[in-house]
Image (cartoon, rainbow, N blue to C red; front, side, top):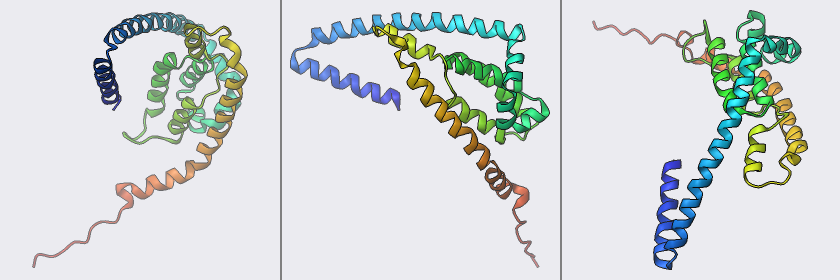
Length: 211
């Protein structure tokens, strides 16, 4: 869909520039836009490499394990099954750390590792309650330092990229405070729906005689 929308926008821009006599302006805008895109990509790439290395070092040094113990009350409430089995807790803590630092792209491989750990021993194709909670929390995670947003604002010429911090803290904390209780409250309902739709819960079809 995004490719189709981009294609339509490019076509409309080209046709309008052609009939309005602004082909030179269109060419200059395309060249400057490509240059700005490369500059922004390199800026984000440097930031992602830095924080990915920091998180990797934190994992090797056991800092994420200490963070998991620090976040024990939250993790125990949000992921009770994983906490009881001690399955995926370290990976979850690492992914949450990346989200706290506001580097969602760096959190993606950590989140994949957490999902793999949570899915071990579970039926294929079925998301557990902890997996659902982790997915929701990944999109509504608290962010202390929105690194990606600050980098984008700085690249766009913002004089004070940090002035959004109060709004980010308030919004992200409210989202997380709402998301976790809701997912845990709806967990029993999802289990009933899963059991009701499982093949074993369905009645066997009637046997008809051919005689």
